[in-house]
Length: 340
Image (cartoon, rainbow, N blue to C red; front, side):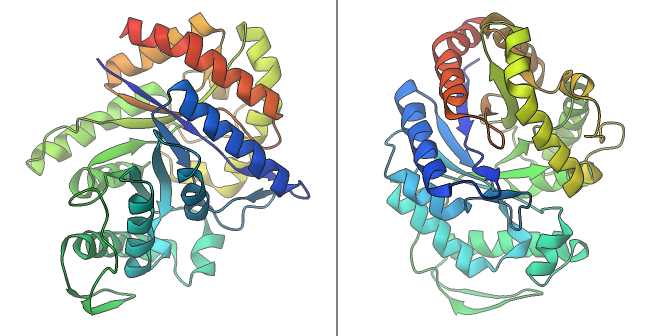
């Protein structure tokens, strides 16, 4: 089994932090990831991110395209139901061209009321708008002119002014938490982008749903099955937890405040658990040998072969991020490849 490893730069920092200085640190992380042999760079997307500040996804990835030559650029994820398809089609195609065909188009519904309201829509409209937007974007990338009426747009002989380098279009990873969303990912996407929040038993149950939906649609199982996962590695487990817990626990407190767990599957939808309970079977934490074993035990039963690691949360110091990147690339990743 071959496997790719990606890195996620969170880009979320406390209010009042110096975002110019933090941008320089993120650029340093990206250059190091390219040098250390990571396969992809992921940047997420949220709006109105209090109590954090955040860099917006597409301009950040476009800037990072100039800092790297090997990393695939994962827009992971675009909150697709908030937007208009022609705008996104042209922006994403531009990013694919300027990165020489390195874009991954990750997309999902979103779940936060503050975001839906700000863009003049609602969670009730999100599925319809998601499907319409994705259908329109695919057509705009593949066709010379598109006529299509959606619930919130109308394309009349509309042309995407720039086509993606990747043909017919970049890989489409669809993020999904709930069972119906996983069926939709099987129907509409190139693969299901597995979320970082659920336990392995939940993922295995939902993989059965995904496989059945693929079979019903006459689609093969994807060659690339990605997942994002929280990770921190130090010299031993005690040190790893001591160093990362203040930052990772804070991030999951915010996820709970934002309502992330409300869209997670029944029985695995409480992100307010104490840290020790929350991390169990959910985060990769420990020394190099232990983390490598955790990753192997995660990938073997699931078949996941592109792991995107989140290794920084909130105001975690830069030296901890860079140290973990080195240990991960130089000690953990070789062990995982050997174990698989």
